[in-house]
Every structure is written in structure tokens, then in C-alpha cells.
Length: 459
Image (cartoon, rainbow, N blue to C red; front, side, top):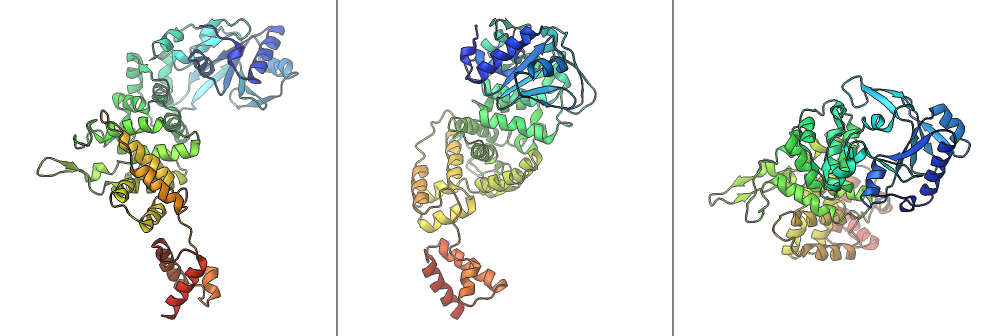
């Protein structure tokens, strides 16, 4: 397939063309490499561009290209230049070798004299080993990555693939993002690797890509199951054999349900990475509590009473292993603990008090309803259903102004001080009582709240 610079948005296209021309003028040649070429071949618009310059040393790049471009050097162990204000990285080809067990334990040596096949040999998958010359539009494909891309196959470039265990999680998210089938050697090599020495932030980075970019996250998750890597995520692994009642869950186990729920979530991402990640993580964790609560009744029916609340601890365990950033579990756990409540409120046609209390427990009803919608849709071959509770609860939440936040206390300590309540435990207890009454709708503004506070103080 022919590629041209017209497929790249300006000003990146202009910069790449000028870089290639300047490189050629001083005796080198430049290629666009990696994910940008893969995306262009798939008809997608890349967000970032990796360029490799052959025939020039880092010092020569700095000298000759630095005259026309603002180059920002990054990296201590290996020189890479960023182009200021553009999503473009510029590097020279390198040799590398494994020096230890960690993801970062590699030795590097810049070598502008090697040819492209030798340079591409260090890459992970064939679909990421394709290069494109933006001046001639020639494609360099020494490992037949374009064929693998057409056939939707994920195959390692060389035996060096197994030197970096992070590539297992890269395989997971690539399979999900591009709906690829892992080759037998991808499966066998990945199954032989372990997660033990991978940095936490790198692990979470690959999970983020699965959740935020996966077209079918289930494919990546089933890949982890196939290669035995769920053992590094015991909370997820425990759901593989956790049964569900086939009348309501013909898709099978809790694990399969979870995977299909993530597929449903992926069709309705909103494009806000933080919001999508909160919801996606909640979908991934929403039924972890079923492992602790599932039981079979005398008639053979399978139930999981109280699994929402039981899911809090395994959710916390899973997320704190994935990231040290506390705000993720703090936001996700309430969504897990309340994901059955919208349906219950709808069935009982509950009033404002119940909606306010749910908003207080869940934190964000708009997030919660996205989790519930994915939950209702993750049951193939059953259709998603009309999700009646969603519009119903959303309308009530908007009316009560609790769609995207917890109810805010109408009265503060300073208000109680105005009526003579001194700071201390008594004030704290009174504020709690008043907030509970506020949730119940006993009062709806400050004037009514102060009147109620005076009544409680004088009683």
C-alpha cells in the first residue's frame, strides 16, 4: 500500500518532509517507523511519529538539523530528540542487549551505520517493524509486517522478543486495539515470561491502553487467560471458574461476563481519558465480589447476594497492585459497591431521598450509569435491553443536581456558630444529623436548614 505525506495532518507533515530533505542533504536518510506507519497502513491518523535517521551520528543530527529545528534532547542512556511543539521524536538506530531481569535492564549503543533490517530486529512485533521513506514513499518491510497487518496476525519480529516481559502486556493491548490474532510463537513465548520484574507504572500504562483504546478489550483479556498471565492478577483469575445462572448469563462465567462488559463499555467511551478510565476500571472490577458470595440454591439457581459490597476489598487489592495512585480505587470502589442500586431504585420507583443517598454513596451517578449500562450489555447472545433505569435515574439526578457530584451539605460549621453552637464533637454530630435530614428532603435550603438546626438545639 502506498503512503504519502498528504495522509498526515499539518504541521507534522511539513516538519517530517523538511527533516527528511535536510537529512538527505547532509548524507543521511530518514524513515518514519513503528506505530505511525502501522496506523497509516490501517487508514488511521497517528497521534505521534517516531523517526529514525540513518547515516548521521547524534552529534551530526544536533549540528545539521539543529540549525532548522528546535531539537530537545531526552534520555540519558540513549539520545532521542523531540521536535518542540510537535508530536515527533527523532533518533538514530541502535543495537541493544539484555543486561538484567527488569524492563529497563538493557544496554544500548547508537549505530547509524547499520541497515534498516538490523535496526528493526529489536522491535517487538512485525506490524510495528515497517518503515516508510517520506521522500520516495518507499516501504521497507523486512519482516513482512504488512502481510501480518492485512491478515490481522500479531507475530514477534525475532527471538529478542522474549527479552522484555512488558511485551506480553503490549500484546494484550495491541490484540484488543486492532483485533489481532496472536500467532502460535507469540503465545508460546509470552507464556514463558513472567511479570515479576516489571515496573508498576509500565504495567498500568499497558492496562490503560487496553481500557482507553481497545476496540474489543475481551480479546486482550482472553489472551492473558490463554497464556496463563491471569495468575499475576488473582482477583481476575478467581472469576474464571465462578459460575453464573445461565438464565440471565448465557455468556458463562463471571470472567466471560466481565470481558464482554468491557467490550460494551468500549463502544460508548466519551473521549475524556480520566472519566473513561474510572468507568472502565469499575466495569473490570464490578463483579469481583461474586467470587466470595456465589451460591447455588436447592432448585439449582445460582445467586450472588451482596456481591456489590463484597467486591470492595478485591477491587482495592487489584487496583493498589496496579497503581499507587490512591484516587483510582477511591473513585472506583463506590461504583462497584453500588452498581446494582440503579435498577433497584427504578423497580421501586424510589423518590428523591433514595436518589440523593445513592449519589452520596456512588460519588458520581453519571459514571455509575455508564457502568450499569455496560453491565446490562455484557451478556451475549442476549441483547443489551432498553436499560430503562438509565434515563429514569439520570433525569431525577439532574433535577436534584446530583448527576456529577455528591450532594453538598447545605449547612456548614460557620452556620451553626451563628446560632450559638460551639465548635467540637457536638457540632460535628449535629452537622451529620442535619445532612442526613437534608438527604431525606426535610429541608432544601439554608433558611429551612437553620430553622431545623435551632429546633434540634432547643429540644
